[in-house]
Length: 330
Image (cartoon, rainbow, N blue to C red; front, side, top):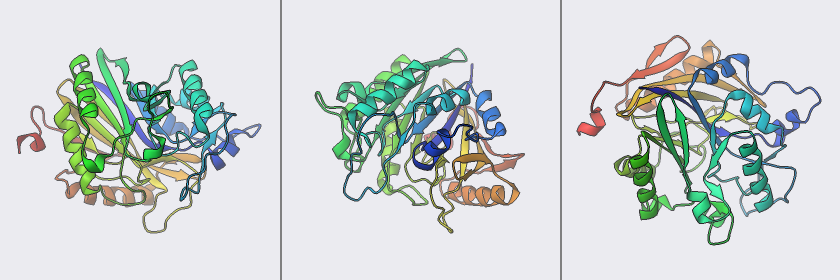
């Protein structure tokens, strides 16, 4: 039995995107072809990088210029995309405080979307989600390595935080192992590393190895706002999915990927990355010139990790050999 999981990175529905949502007749945030792709997957998981609420007050942090909150109708957008679960373990979960975080979780749950990575206390924030599709069970664990000030604690709402620069803590490795024992596929969603860098930091690569060693079937990273290369078991950074950000002329954070990973109990069997373009508050498939830029950049990033990417139609594809992967045989 196999299933295909659609994965998207930083999904910011506040600020200019929220303004679009509040219009009487808002422009669709995602093109029809994007919606068709996500509908084909058995499950869809993304990193929701904002609160969803009408409540709360801004919680400014020194050196953090942007605070993100989306209106409740943002949940309908996620539902229409077929989102099954989101990670809230990120830099912006508490931008509008504990009340807005609580609203976010309640609104998502009310629409059948599971949320992981943030909660009323540490145990709640660290709790996994269990998803079922294609005859398989998927355990989802979410964590962020920043900011420490937003970490959930005893009786304190916040995010599941781990200082990955110091290594993977025992509680996190034990949680991944426990989820792996009870599920067919274990997905770790992790918000790690600095923003606007084109490759994973050394500590990120060490943490990725530790996650796989602990039992992660697939690791999906995010935070850089740029896509990185990948191996069979680790997508180091998914890149952006929607936002209203200014575009860096060289890094091109307006170009990204929608990921489709087909897995079975032995791990990923195929990874497909579909080039996308992030316009202001709207995401669509990349045009030919954008596709070529994305393909060249991803090919180079993957080559450094020993992964070969092939162009196939509108996608960039790797078919992994059955059995043990090269990285597992080293």
